[in-house]
Image (cartoon, rainbow, N blue to C red; front, side, top):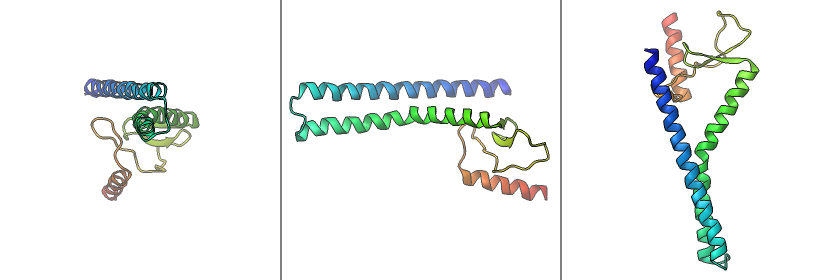
Length: 137
């Protein structure tokens, strides 16, 4: 069972790496086009010059948003680990303080993940936490 989960996680990392690579290569290509346009067009301050500068730049920055989000999430995860918050595998990445004992309660609802490892929305986490409370009572 864990081998299947590890294989699925490895496949997802490969997909994420491929997506980041495609986004970065596309953004570099668009920035290269903007650079070529700046040198080849002669007059940048024209309708065509502004269009061929602004539109590819905006598209390139939107392509760079996906890798930037991945880098930011890694940094935030490292910061959480450095603070002493650790993710438990059984609770689906529930955050528990390092100094707290097993009888402690969650500060937030457990962060559940779907079968592909993506985080579920906060309202779904809250509803599941409320259902689990009702089952315990």
